[in-house]
Length: 427
Image (cartoon, rainbow, N blue to C red; front, side, top):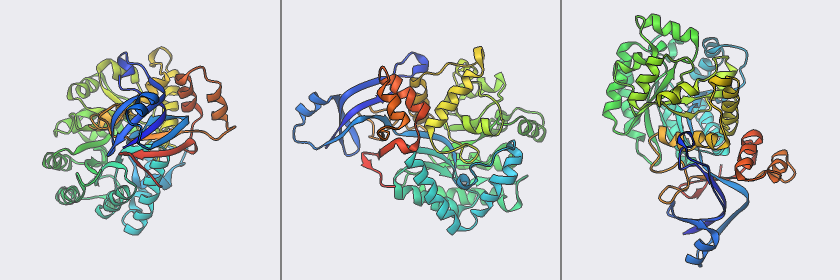
């Protein structure tokens, strides 16, 4: 047993439906075998467990580990390719890096950089777009296991309109996907995600195979892209006989509670209703949407229809692994929409990068907040003395204002320690 002492902030009750930020100052959290077994004032927890060791986290903020619901493993070295819209950006920056994953040794170097970048940014769980090559997906899962991250990922499949070396066939996609799932799904903290790149690059035959794999791997997730860019949406509609983007997946049984679809910047009302009724989730990727000029995410409309929303970094179109930065950009995007936007508080932002992400990934019974019964996935934010964030927090009126200032000024450099399942990560 270990007692963690500090100021703990989390959102067990959804702020979008009336919940508040939960703040416990000078609190004690008792962890046994990675699970939180008691939480209260430090004095009370210490009195009940006088012999247990104490980890002193005072002087900072203890938050749940972040949950990234959309991030591309092969694209870390493509971050910063600015000035192009989605399809042109893919051709110039992303897809050449995706093709380099054919070299397993190159992929292993990228995988190591990738998982350590996530952990250093306070991300403890992630839904990761894998690679088009099975060997590269293997090295991703190996690297995640070495660091200890909770990673859900899989083979990315496409059979048209990309570089030819990234194409597969329905039969090959089926065989390689099932083989990867057999090796990694449910092994340690790894899970499998069925991952067609997007409808634009997938025939109906390939999407049908994706459904077959999803049904044959109990507990697997489904992830892909949706309604990101207007030119992309028009091309998808033309390829699929005029149907909307969500329907290209739904008609193959790929839209349900297991589905996490990235972006959805330009949805129709019909699509939002379908997503809500299916229980699917949307990964909002604010810095990517801004960098590629994709548009402003219609959060209000998603909430009105009851669509689940969480945040993703979308590295490499996104501008880094920090979900603090994504939260701030999400705030900006809503402010820019005036009366059509949804005002976001610090509690909303924390919810989007923790509990909402855990819910989207089907992990809300295990992670997302720091309640009794949850796993101790946590991070300590403690800025350097005299830094702009430290000065700003010192002059905050209360912990919620300190959290708002953390989203505004915080970077991975302010994250002093990260725990997953109660284990301190060494990255």
